[in-house]
Image: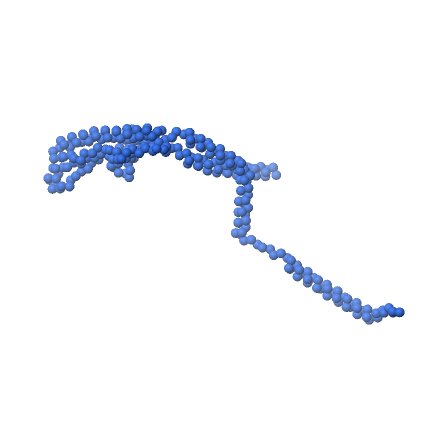
Length: 263
């Protein structure tokens, strides 16, 4: 038979001490492990710089704006198309304007003063005199001919530019011809009168007598210079697109205010 061996009181005390010591050791080790695990599993907090925050906010704003425009894309397309179509109708139905230009040299004359040469022994006394000042002539032509724009190129006294705009190439050219005829007729009379006056003075001889004349030919545009159809349509498209975007933002601002008021 096997006998039940019971531990003596001394042995029981020893066993109890060992178990208590192991328990205390386990209790001490467990918090250490928990602290270590907490340190390992605790997430690290990352802080963004002001520049990163600015870029993130800017990206959010751009996305929001694009979303607003995309939601109203039908309205934007409709307004842009409508304005572009109206501008095209205006441009293609407006009366075309043609232009004609010409360059006119103002006449002049020279005279040789024999009396002045004999008294001063100077053989280089050649005087060139314009029939009329270019600036004064331009003002006169602009007053007499409303369809003509006259100007003096580079502020010279020898030439004037003539420009005419009309509803046809032929009319613009005829306007230029009419002005040139007026200039040559008027200057021819002045030259004839001046020639007689100088010839009546003793010791004066008139020579190199030139009336005003056109330089080259009249240049008439083959295509209308106005209206510039492509430019009008392009500008209308851009203006309509910008106006529609502006209108969408205004509508969105009013909607936000209404939402705040009803909230």
